[in-house]
Length: 273
Image (cartoon, rainbow, N blue to C red; front, top):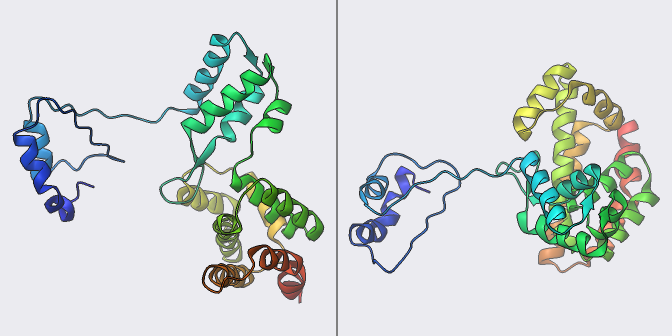
């Protein structure tokens, strides 16, 4: 908000700021920096009881300190690796551009930590594995990896486990599309003959996180045998699959299981030819 084109949306608010109700506290939450121009920002600045404060999200280090303080307050303890795993499993909020590392959901982190400290006096990685669900993206990453490794049976088992956890098919499909979109972008850069440093730099800028050039070697190995054009076909087929489930009421599980079962035959064998 607060762009030039939206200034007109706040006419009533600007009038209110000129004569605010003394018994009312009004909070405006803005994602990002305020645009420091226009009548609305000026009205906020002119208000004698208006306070502007920038609130930054906690860093990973601050979240880990928070987890350890919770343990201390509960007279419990948690292994450092377990705390890091808990933090990773609490990343459920997508980044603004849809790529890169997800943001930590504070309530997920808080509730998961409370569950762990209720369960045991000393939290280990195994406790986190047993009691805290992995984020959907992690499960989908595992399925996609098995598909690319030609492990159709493993992919079907992993999909079945994911469905048993209560995730709906229409909730899974966007995550699938996101993973294959990432694969397609990486494969495009590989086919353009960019070196590992350049690929890592481009992907890092798009995804908003640092990517080590050494990891590109393993990505190339993982994606060999399947072309960029094939990834585009996969993305198109996933879009059609989602449409058929939403609008033509096809059975989601049947369609997904067919997609997984035929993945090697339809996409990988064709790429090899």
